[in-house]
Picture 1 (cartoon, each protein chain N blue to C red):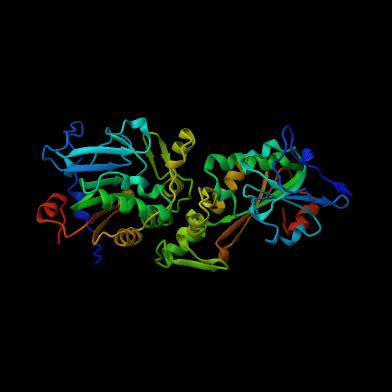
Picture 2: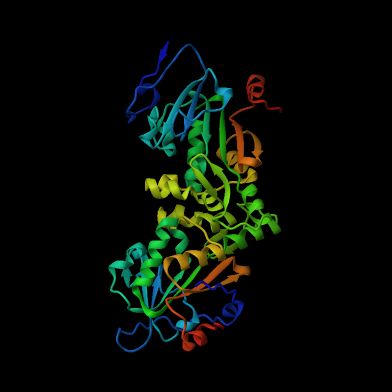
Length: 225
Length: 223
């Protein structure tokens, strides 16, 4: 059964992670999060992972990930080993038919009570803003440290990064709305899905559980049943 | 009778074409169809009587030249009266697209023009928002199947999955305004735009120089 909820409080409560530097060895009892496609550990992960073991997986070795692996090959990792999979602005980098394979990989590496924590651009929110503000595709939507970001960049990937790196994996090969994200998570096999829309960032945030979230998880993530 | 042999088309190296190039009778104008897939797909009527040369990266549809459109600068310059490029420019990254357009300028004669058609994302996003659509909703139905909003933006999912070819993916998108700008930036001095809202398409005729009265008449354009 699918339940989609718009949980703005999840956003309001979020604080940047205080520490990401310490990666304790497995077996110390701390919960473990697999950061899929997170580029490098200098980029903060959400505050709800403070004190967790943070393992970074990326296809690009540049940012010194703990595991260099294509996220479409997560089924090659040991099963049931993570409490959470954090995947921020990565799922849009796979063709539609490959996205399902990536999500199956999340289910594979998650413990039975684990969850996937997914962020992607909100194409519906972007389009509404483009029309409301009478923007063109190449107008500046906002300015990032590396340069201006256009609506075209949000849809297709940041052209500055694609050109500079020459790497195809920086391109966005699909896009999502709140509904299409909830649908693909349900189809992949997550029975319990929460989706939040962050209008000001044109971003979607989904929490997808293998089974009903525990009271501890609800408290940690600010979920209301 | 003009028989164009391969070395006349490409400079430097030989062209990896499987087929002999077509013979064009008399001094007919010549159109290079870039990325047109197959000659079974009709090209606009204003090319009737022209010599039609098909260039495609995919050999499946028997193009005259199997070639990557990003490397048109390897072909001989100023040999075509027109470049026809329908639903292909959206298949290149933004920086590659600029290279493709410079290649069009390279192969066009001084009075030549580029005839470009791409999906009109402005039209798509207007309908998407006005009709409260979702990305996987059907925008229209083509002979090969249903086309969703996501397919128009990112390329036809069915084709990408079945072929396994990355070149079927859409790597950028255009509005009428962004198409004009990219053509002007590439160096086309005179650009005419028309939108076909019912097909979610925007087209451009882009000239290197001031169009001749004959070309304006042929294409139904007014200065």
